[in-house]
Length: 129
Image (cartoon, rainbow, N blue to C red; front, side, top):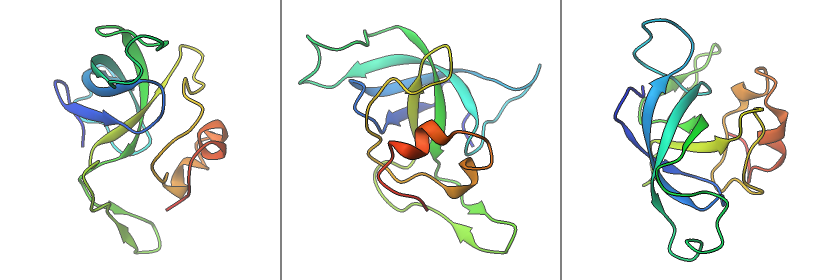
């Protein structure tokens, strides 16, 4: 569950390292965002190698898709999924049109995003959970 002021890690090769959640999209007084929802983020830190040649600048605002959270995700068939690694809360940056900025996603993506018509993200990801 992601809320405002949460620091998130970026799991793609766009050039950003960490971002901060500014707003949770999807309602007037919505407080929390779950897996597969979009949020508005501000770039806090860039990766060292891409500071000069990056498309992304620090303190810019982008939309992001949540692909991993610390909270366990329960499927309808009873399976519970949780990711046990350092990139617990992670996102993928996207442009205003809704397509990904990056060319590769470095973390596996949950299968439930297939139903939400996010096939562009599934095609460039490393795998599915």
